[in-house]
Image (cartoon, rainbow, N blue to C red; front, side, top):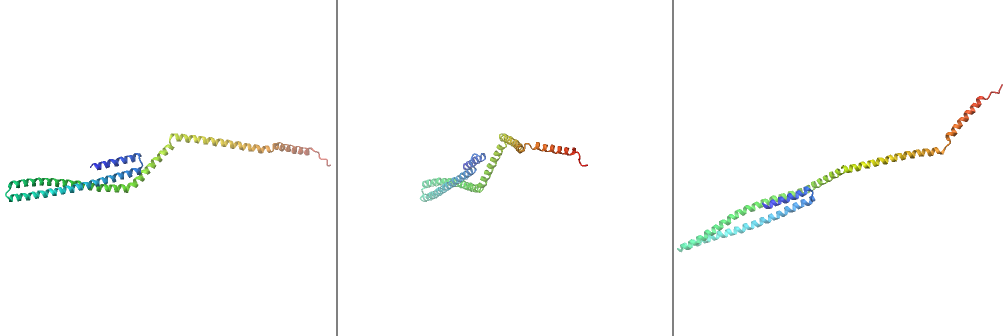
Length: 230
């Protein structure tokens, strides 16, 4: 039926938007459920209208059948009064009402089949709506998880991209340069500190060497002095 074909088109369109990321998953699923509910209401209204038409047709058929029986009674009455022409006219009327009644009851049969088909379609749609409602939260969670995964992969792709890698390499070079400068400055600071301590005793080495010379000279003098004791 056209209503189901339209429903299928609506659901497919909404799911395509969901897959393509054009709309929020929760909004899309809510819209799908709303569309299905709207179609369910429309189908129920169609069933109500079909049933009303069926009942009206049934009343018309019964009325035509009743008229056919009435004209048959009149034909019998005319024959009883030896009025064959009048009886013939009454039978013609009876046949016309019989044809009308038969046509109407054939329509009732067709309408019954339509109503039964609509009822089955409504039951199927009700079950589908219940299923969608039950799984809606799961679909939303899966869609959000898929979106988060996609964004994470996209972010990691950016992080490990060419431009980012170049930036990281430049940053690494700068850090290494800073570390080298710090090392040089540290060495210079240590040398300067040693020099400052050395400046505290600028003549320490000379004084030590002078003391050694004096000691040596004294020893030499003592060794060269003759013994004056007899």
